[in-house]
Length: 115
Image 1: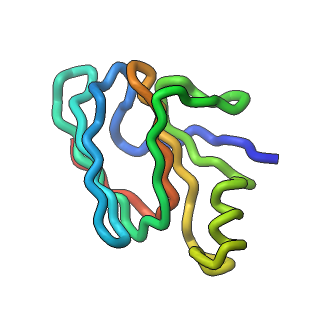
Image 2: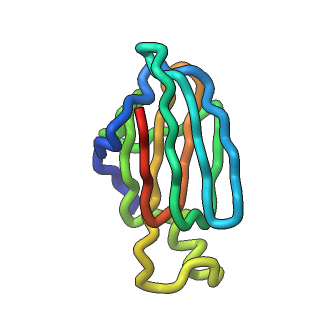
Image 3: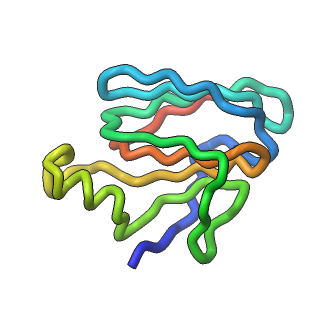
């Protein structure tokens, strides 16, 4: 069964503006202005998949305005079963809840953020 653990990625999605998403092969860059009006830029490394949705669904104990990692992820498992991610890879299922506008999910190995 899927469950979440809150993570601190070094930035806040609470009350942030709608993000801009720019994808490349194996990468994703996300930029947005946070609640302080400061520009946040995030580079996701070794991205296999991502999705944005404005009507997000939360798991128990998941913050509506924060960041978390999903464990026992059905979405990540589907990518392993489908051969897009090798078994035992370092890919993680991260979810960023922008309470003011939506939810971003990313399957990636790591992230680099500047705020």
